[in-house]
Amino acid sequence: MVFDPATGDLLVAEKDKITTVARSVLDTGLSTASPAHAQDGVPLAPISIGGVRGLVVNRCNAKLYMTVAADGLLVEYDPATGKSRNVMSGLRDPGALLAIYRTGGSCPDAFHLLVSENGNYRTLLVTSQDGAFTRWLEIPVTDLSFLPSGNPFTTKAGILIGESTPASSPYDSASGFVTVVPLGLYDAEPPNPVVPVP
View 1 (tube, helix red, strand yellow):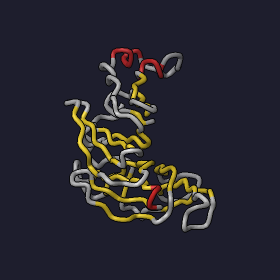
View 2 (cartoon, one colour):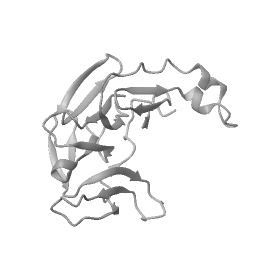
View 3 (cartoon, one colour):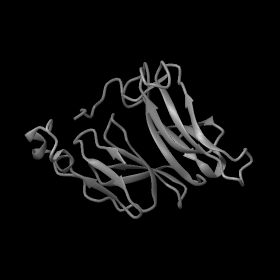
View 4 (tube, helix red, strand yellow):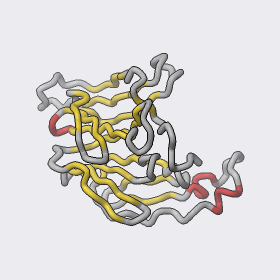
């Protein structure tokens, strides 16, 4: 699940598609909800891409990125045109995704992705424009979350990693969380977002 920063709608990756829950539905009954949200733009129509495991929004250009585990793909979807393209193929069991933005850069170049590739027990740092990647971690990752500065776990911003190692892996079988601090190189917010935050 991820929020569309342009509309505030919730995008939900289901088994066979991605559906949209309108912000006005989410705001119903909230005392702080603004009546203006009921007039938000039309939610995205369901996107027919099955088997989506990870889903993020690029706040530089409002494109969606998703991993499709069964096909070994990292896919970019442009809601404005309805077209998709494969950023990467040949991945082994891709899963969790995290959108991060390089500090000191500007949109669209600042946008990068962390992609867990569970079949190869690694997480990749990927540039969306050309699919170039660097091995970021050599552990199997089930979830990625950005921790803002001032969080209860670290003094600086960091990335919380959900780790689950199956017994068949070359690593010790274990489950837990590891916090990685990116030393100020990345942030959860783009430096100059094109897409407004609702």
